[in-house]
Image (cartoon, rainbow, N blue to C red):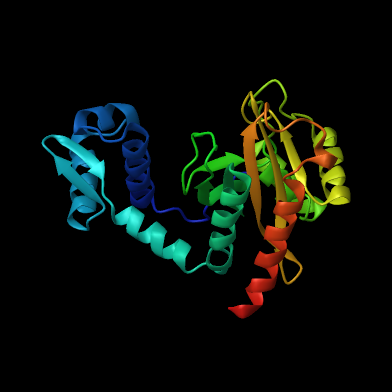
Length: 253
């Protein structure tokens, strides 16, 4: 179920809608925003002017865009996270060892958020970037994290976000997802057999700090380089070693 503020501030809500629309369009004019958001031009202009004054929006001619202030905030937030401090070197090392694309992902509000990525010398170039979000049920990293959460929390996430189909292989049934999470717990890693993107397979392992799951690390590669014989996959042991090092290095912070 979507969380709602008990006493929402309407002006703040409207500013956030303007920000979201600017982000979706990669910039827009006042008229475009007014039409899309069903707001008056003067109201949209007031929101934009305020955001511009505080450095969150920049104006290029008649077009407004989000400023790099958001990058500054996000970068600082990430740099202060313990999991990033200890995991980033292992993400880089695992990408170099495997030659593939490696991601570090954490859960926030029931979604997977990419915290960092590294590309090996034969890695595919996916549509992922630091900060982007993805449903948990249709990815190896998501299932790795979900497998370590209490059943009640998994149910909450499903109720909030549903189980939308991403590809023909995506799990869209609640019982089937819980069965997949049980298999993940048994073998210690999660798999994604073209559930997020056709032609791509992934494996992922959860990262735990003090008995709590705080993220996952994943390896992604084309189906031509990762077959569906998961138990004998050559990337499983390097993945396990990387997560083990990350969990041990937590105690150095």
